[in-house]
Amino acid sequence: MGLSILAYFCLAISGIWMYIRRQHPRYNRNFTYKTVIIRLCHYAIGICMVFLVLLLLAIGIVGTLGHFGSLGHSSHLIAGLSSVVLVLTSAFSATQINSDRSWARYLHVSVNILLFFVFVWVSLTGWDVVQKYLPE
Image 1: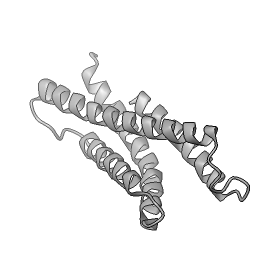
Image 2: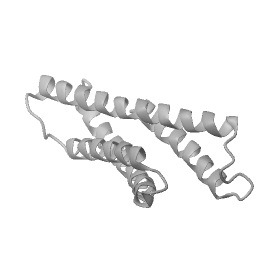
Image 3: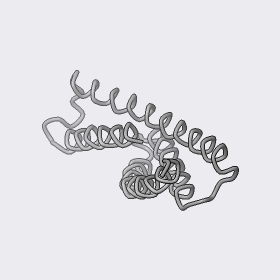
Image 4: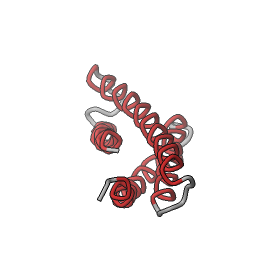
């Protein structure tokens, strides 16, 4: 989960940087080498985050089924599934962003703001789950 949160913050920093560059009149539509590198890193980290979240989902399901025999022992399942849905929605909206689809950037940013709070929820409920696995 720590790598997913690190990826989230790296994406937030690079996304804010791209937003500032896009809004500044001096840099508007002036694609420099640095801009291209930041954008490619943003895409690459985003792809990594999608894989990390899906991996965490698989580990969580397998681990919970192996330890408890069934799912749904805490609100961590709902929090985890919510984060997966939001990450996939964010990834989909990112692929739709262009000048013809102004809704896609708004959706992408809005989902990512909501994702911050869901990551906090997942982290807090995950701590309770981890405590169940540890021996007393």
